[in-house]
Length: 255
Ligand SMILES: Nc1ncnc2c1ncn2[C@@H]1O[C@H](COP(=O)(O)OP(=O)(O)OP(=O)(O)O)[C@@H](O)[C@H]1O
Ligand SMILES: [Mg+2]
Image (cartoon, rainbow, N blue to C red):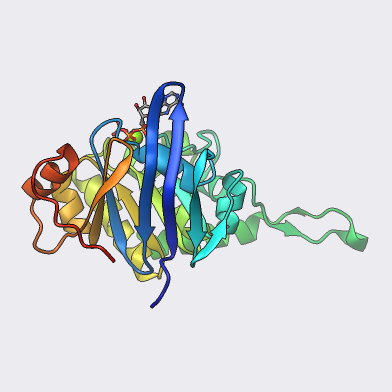
């Protein structure tokens, strides 16, 4: 049996008296697009932060390829092949897409006599152009500051950055919430291209129709716990809503 790419077991996280996660489980398998759904406050963003190293649980286990790991910070998660696009994107608005894609990971050319090198801007711009073309992001001027881009283009740059560095999993927290129909379709196409490159995608969304269209599988969080794992095939919106709100439909697909 192949191990899940990424797995959370019994994750607990409290904020004062609020128990955001009460022993939550989560599974991502290689090559799949997983929807992570749940009502407001169910604990989705908290779980994503923990699996991205941006927050640390008080109990529970994280496993990568079946091996227990500890993520103390986002660098630890990135080193394990996990990239995250947060809802606010965390791009640097005054920099161009190339500078954003390489933020904190700039390519240096070796300096003379082993001294500190200088930034290899040409190499970075070339790689950015390749990545942008590969993912089908539509940028008229690749050197324009991110602040001047449309919401959909910015989303494309953020996903491209994650796709360029991710080796295993990309988390997308509400990537289309602020987008129009065409831009939304662009991001959904991007998600498929990322998956085709062999990277698993976790999509957090409140749009159940979209989740059913894009995802292979859905995991449902309710009150800080996983309450269902469903294949999207043969599942309808009503069943998803029922699982989120604790209705009767709970077709557990235990692995
Ligand atoms: N930094 C924090 N400080 C205090 N409480 C927090 C913090 N982060 C999350 N919470 C609480 O934890 C619970 C889960 O929040 P979380 O953001 O994970 O939910 P969510 O499922 O992402 O919801 P939404 O769909 O609204 O984004 C909520 O009750 C929230 O108020
Ligand atoms: Mg959230």
